[in-house]
Length: 274
Image 1 (cartoon, rainbow, N blue to C red):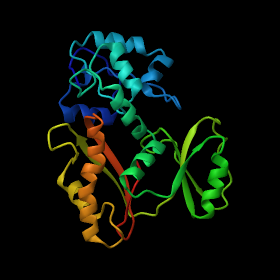
Image 2 (cartoon, rainbow, N blue to C red):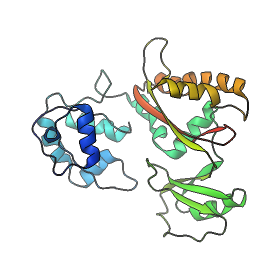
Image 3 (cartoon, rainbow, N blue to C red):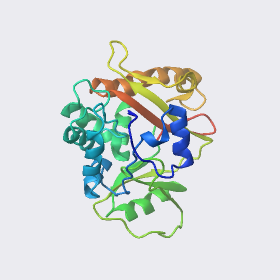
Image 4 (tube, rainbow, N blue to C red):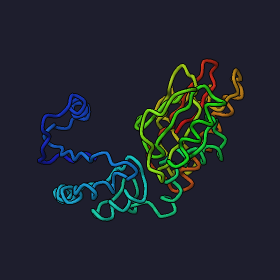
């Protein structure tokens, strides 16, 4: 939540200026703390790793109505809210329950999403989880059945840490730490990539995911979970998405935004990625 107050924003980027203008927030009212990329560590913990927790604490002290809106809800972000003595949006009790955190935690990783999605019947690219120690073996085994595979850091977003491997490729980077976690998936040839934005709520009869706009709702109704060329099955499959994905999250106590990233093949088949 933006709380206009005195602050500093040195040389804001064009994107930040655009956001400030869009939200109607004065540029000099926002303090930005940049946390260096820290592999295998949640950002809420990386703050302390880089000695940024105290500067953040000082900024929070200047803002009596400060709230935490985590990009990824996990135990680390809940602990950060508790440490800063501020609530995590949108939980009325301040922070989500331990049970909610345990249920949502897998959705913050590529391997955890695959496990949950498979249990809910979403179509996924063929693939498997891997540790850094076995990544080379898994990578060379999968291309035997697929022309190309994608290596994904287990906890990442926005394409960070993706590597594409085809038949005969030689390793182009040094081996990762043996205890790191990855997902190796078949690369799905597609005509477009889709990120459907939704919101899980806890209102009676509304526990599923509500999609951001009508286009995304129509898209889900048309092709989600549909066998290739089967519009009728697609409609029924999309109707199952709401109770399947949004209902799963809401039933576990999750409240707030969520997204589902997918790719659509030329014949209209949709694959869920994360």
